[in-house]
Length: 44
Image (cartoon, rainbow, N blue to C red; front, side, top):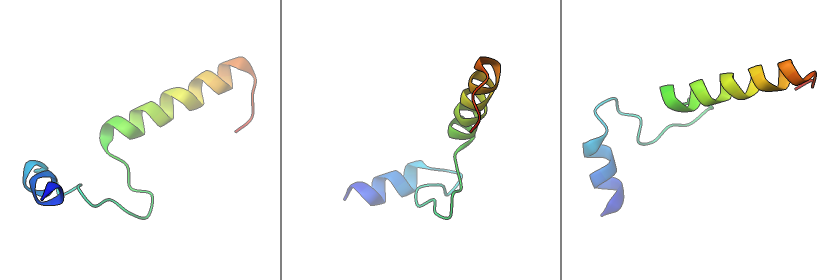
C-alpha cells in the first residue's frame, strides 16, 4: 500500500500532516512566495 511506503520512508513522521503543518520545503516556498508578493507590492 502506498501510504505504508510513504509512512516508512518519511523519517520525520510527516506522511500525515494536518492542521497546516508544512514540510520544511513547503514552508520555505511559502516564505519565498510571500517575499515576492511583498516586493511586488501585493498584500496577502
